[in-house]
Image (cartoon, rainbow, N blue to C red; front, side, top):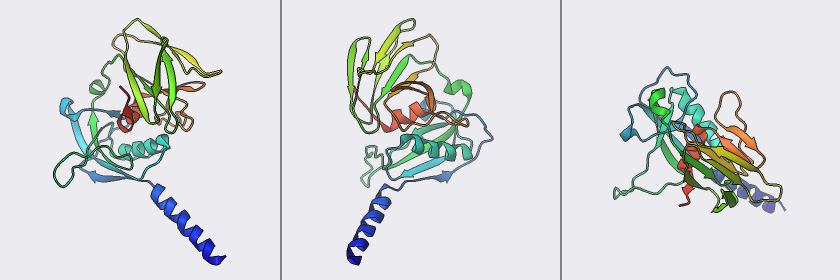
Length: 227
């Protein structure tokens, strides 16, 4: 009996170790005295930014909101308000594909004007664990887990979005000229509400969640686009 208990304990510890996640500042080049709440994804090659450092994420978690909260907290320690994904290279100098259990972000500071560029894009994200089906103006989209699709909106148009479930939600989205991109997630039950100034939900209507740009940009990086 004791041997069995020891075996179970070792198994539980192994599972815990494999699922453990570590988010840490792996490099700090400089810090910035910056108190804004932004944390947007950028292309540093096409932006005027200051490089501040890097964050490493090791270990996988399906709780994307908690992962992002940890990254956001670390980034704000050095005043970062922008990030970009930094691919790892193999020994033969080939870029490795994104690995949700091991990745690196470069941290930057950018001006508000640089970050708040207008976009007509509307992003729809699936949940982290289950496929989702949505209807946008009567056109159906099936999204596998951890994926998203993008619609290029037309200013002045109204888009009716439904989850096609019994008692599911329906919302209407308007697209305005010179407005920022919009982000929505379907049945993401683990997303936390927007509290204490941290990124999260900006709208909640049943099983459709409107996300702020910071968290939406993060999901856009770690999820796969379903084209």
